[in-house]
Image (tube, rainbow over all chains, first blue to last red; front, side):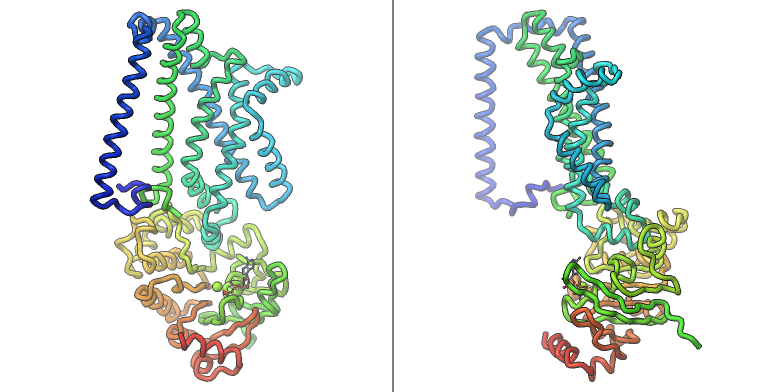
Length: 276
Length: 247
Ligand SMILES: Nc1ncnc2c1ncn2[C@@H]1O[C@H](COP(=O)(O)OP(=O)(O)O)[C@@H](O)[C@H]1O
Ligand SMILES: [Mg+2]
């Protein structure tokens, strides 16, 4: 299967291939030297000493980390699903033929997407009690993440829906489907597929947004890592472990989501770049 | 005996903003009749075609199909469209569905046919159009001619009473045109009522009952194909035919 990049450029000739090989080897060497140097300096100041890492062998610390990771994933999952659903609804409402609906949704999206999630979180903390609503911290975080990310997702999806060829809707209408059903069965799957890279990026961004839970003492991954670091005195090591965990989770998230959507919306072609 | 046309357009008007795209169009199409619409680019042929299944809403006059006024919107319009097939210049197959899925989509969703019935009918159409071995492929894996044949099958499976073809062969490589025109000729011979926007004079002479010549949003001339091509009455048709013969 050729990649999008391969299809965008002419295949390299013999000289091109030699250049590519040389550049690849050179970059690999530079990278290895760089990492080695970093580790060396870090190690000279004792950063790699076994006793500084042994805390991560303690069952208590591991349990704490596992709990924190679970808290991060639970918040991200709930907010991710809610934001996707709300974002899709908002995007569809903006395709409405009634201009007042479009206008209201546009205003809502414009406002919520320009607000920092942290600010929304402050509002949920300070305002909701006035209305007699008392949410657990978990739901406060989920709510704030949902509000801001749904706005972004609706914009991403709307852009990809508008970019679809106009003939797709017309073909479906001509076959006797109503407009809402045409949008649902024909446009939405294609829109999701086209928006996939941007949607994955947005969901990763959402997952990282869970760190804002610290302002409401929601014990997610970063919050607990800092606690472990401060308690043991090995702050840097704790943050490095947290980094690795975030990296692993986000990579897994992006792989799983991409595979899933590709599967649902297969077009028999190898990538989205050349779909339309 | 009073006439009972399948399609009747009376004083149909259509504007795009300030552009007057259809000017007082009057046309009656009998059951089983094949109408070829011809005319220069921008003369309103596509617009005329698209008013007949409500893809363009008219702003004057009336359109009657099978005795019923064309519904303006909603479910009634959708029901009418299910009985009027349309074939587009750009095929407009659904890229994320296989050939078979493209064809059974409307029978399943609109007519609620069982999957086995729909597939059975789809297979017959595909076999008849010479694309039986393509049914598991996606549209992008087919040639233009194959895609257009699938698009015709997708419309025909609904058993429409009227078929609209808007320049169905204009986007095809020359060697693909014949296969698609053959299918259209077969349909015409079987008695399908058809409105065909095309510049293919061979098709018009072989299959059209009448040729409608349009220019600047008006119907300038309606005649039998041989009469029209051999001795057009209007000066505009004369000029147009000279132009396309030169190319
Ligand atoms: N959706 C539209 N919006 C604005 N103008 C349009 C639209 N569709 C068609 N037109 C205009 O109406 C005229 C007739 O178009 P069309 O029916 O597509 O002509 P033809 O099919 O004969 O080439 C053209 O001048 C075209 O620019
Ligand atoms: Mg046209």
